[in-house]
Length: 62
Image (cartoon, rainbow, N blue to C red; front, side, top):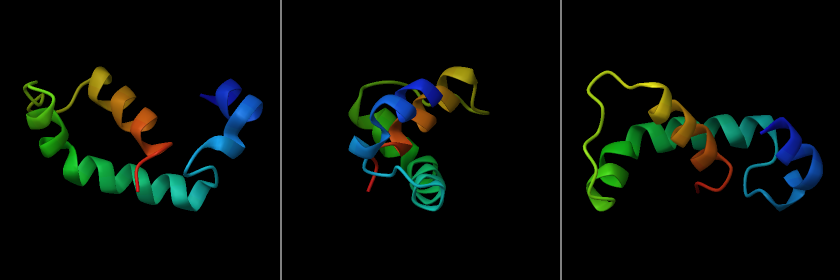
């Protein structure tokens, strides 16, 4: 993600730290809907894949 940001972070919806962290929190709050819409089961306590999805989603989540 660091390399992606340095090479094209200006294209991210949430390129700044504050907006990225706000989007990260928002996506985590709404993650159950994303999992439902994707036909996936949300991991009960989270896992590394959940965390990776959350980080990636925070780059574009509004």
